[in-house]
Length: 407
Image (cartoon, rainbow, N blue to C red):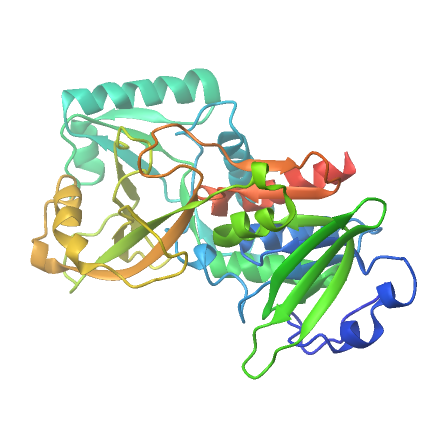
């Protein structure tokens, strides 16, 4: 198989081999069997799974100078249990499968992936919220077969005395946290070990399909001082471009099938100083009625440090990670309902992330992951709206896409 000139273990920064020796210029054979566009954790997982098939030749393309610098590294790093979404949805099925893959297959000593099954509570403060919790509990037991427990406020006060629970909590013991960077290191290593190629700093600026000839992916280098354009031919293309997935999709699909993504920024908040009561598990409020988020929750990192968020505001920019300190008062109101030990002055904005959504601020309809081989474009698999629980689902999404090609 034609290979790009290697410059390091997991990164090729120039197209020297491709620009000089592309096989498409020599004969009709494509350069790759599969090109994956987008090097976030989901794109990495797809490329890793496809690279495991001996007959495949796989290329992972990333426009930024490093992999996983957008949504994949600006999130809560939660291993979700899969309890919130409709039972027959891809979000639920792939979240549960992905969670089980992490716990059953990603042993830290063997893979280097760092995770902790710490559990979480969804806490109800009012009678109305308690009714929602009871429905969530029944759904987990009757429809999802996900392990949960409904515990009283008396029990919660003994187990987590620093958390206020007015009525009840749904306890989810299979929720956890994961170091997303360790997962991405593992996935990139898997691609490399299976002879897949990875390229950073190359932005896709064109995508074309010719019946019988496959796909031509046109890229442009984004390194300073470089203005090189290259064409890569492929039998199959996977669009996993995250925040830019609609842009890539619309390069190929006819105008009447164009997609649009909406961008939901979430700020994360931290405590300005230490000395506040510790918490041993994740704490979530009952999710808001609009279904657009899971609420401003309390999470902990691998070292037990507390972080709150994300909140939710729709923005126009896909990648403006400027934090919004004006949201601190609203965040305080949400957080102090279950963690009453702080004043508004104790909070500061730590970071933010942006989620690619298939519904805008005026829509209240549930939107599932969009993962499908597009009609009329054989071998083109489109992924849009891969937001939370995308990190948890990532390897399961990779296997789902692989089954599209190899079942």
